[in-house]
Image 1 (cartoon, helix red, strand yellow):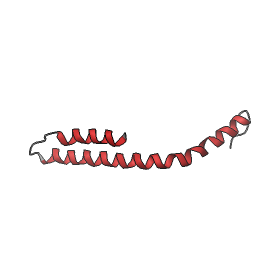
Image 2: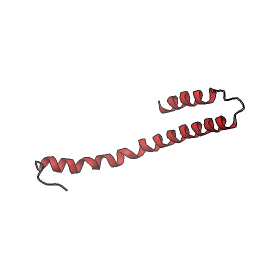
Image 3: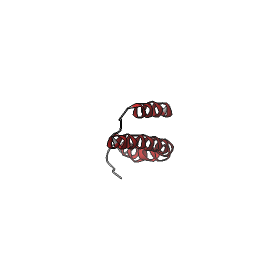
Image 4: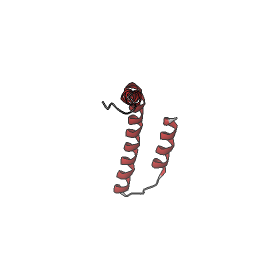
Length: 72
């Protein structure tokens, strides 16, 4: 699903006709590089978050178990 959204966004960036203006072509290159970087970040994020997310709720569970009397 992410790859499809990336492809659609990249298609629109690459279809813009900037003419011979070098600055606008540079902006298009930066947009394409940014979209690629976002794709890599989303790929890494989906593989890393599940490993650490389960430990986040342990302190909240202890807080709920102690009826908000013990804060770790």
